[in-house]
Image: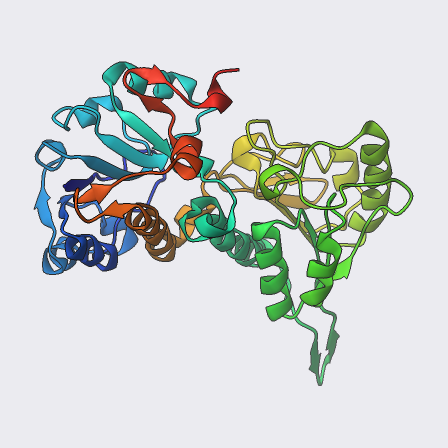
Length: 373
């Protein structure tokens, strides 16, 4: 069993799909691990550290040759997989809905694509869930980046010259990223409030010491949406939420938006008219900017200023914390493969529940039900 890890080639991608820690663990399972030279440099992992952990180092072609499994952050171009064994697995992020041509290319090449973002949100797959691990870091980084752009302090400060009031932070969307954003803003001393369409998140917000801001006159989602995500709400709810948010957002210093719907463009949460009501010097961080943005006028990897408000958003927020993001992603990969490791066969054998959920292509065909509609 040969596991290959190639250097990431997507613009702005600083992460790496394996670390010395996970290399050692794969070797302990009986696998041979090959890493492309320089693959870990942007994540502060040296080639020497990989060699010490038991990995073989080489060029992309040398690493891919006879590989049974290729691990990646972003799915590599099919051309880089020449030399892998027939039917080799590639476990990575595929963006299956947004990059359908890439999925088609994998099917044509006879490669088995395993989409890590399709990992089901069930208890036994939590340790394999890359979206959760990366969103956790993204929520933290969003607050830190917003604090850096914001021209004032976060905590209340009492000095001989007078008192500085605590910054007011409003988090929109209380999933994994939103909860971490709340916790981080609270640790920095801000006065934090948050909202979500799922009423079940109200207690989570309160447990972190933040104030929940919810529409009370129109029913939202009582529990969780599909797979733990929110779904699109009725026009009546959207109108009521817009009115509530408009009144609240005008009083905020920092707003963090985190709302995403799988397979769809990010929902619009903040309009330019609402931005115009905010105080000059306020900051909005749009975590969904790469999926179309929650904020009108947000642009990936640029600071846009409108009505005196700075709007920030990274196309790949987790990649701004490359070392930690790589460590968590690599553990997700290891937890995924090791959970199905068959000692007799010396390789992982996926079950139907998780295997069918993440598998996009097999035997030259697209086999995932979510892509057949």
